[in-house]
Length: 172
Image 1 (cartoon, rainbow, N blue to C red):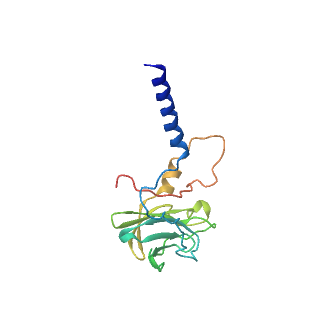
Image 2 (image 1 turned 30 degrees about the vertical axis):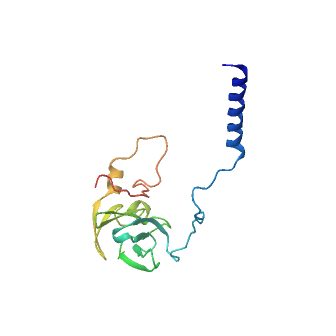
Image 3 (image 1 turned 90 degrees about the vertical axis):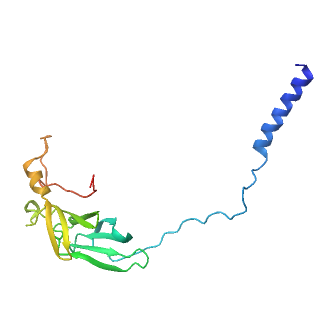
């Protein structure tokens, strides 16, 4: 390749690189940019709401440990109705109905910090919602924790029945 030809190839490559960095890209379409997302407060006034999930029909279900209720929130209107009530309430400021999950159309509520070790009389565990005011304990997690304490690590546990705070369905 001649010296002139090499010089021409080098200059062409340099111009191509400079053009790529100096010329702004052309928009592929004339559509306006998407607006930034906005947040809208859906509901206020919950009494110690902690856990929540999207349930059947797309509604938001929120636990209220202080009242022992599960609330259903319509995601379009923000209207709040009571889905279930009568669950064990919080005793020490936290606890009671902590979280909720659905398997199919059946709701399960995690209840904690309501056992005798914190001055309560209720079962620490998972409650199946059988009706608006009816529940069945399907897992006594507090009794399991008492029967299977953690390996001694040189300190005592303040709440022997445990402090459970989240519920997640696993393999149905």
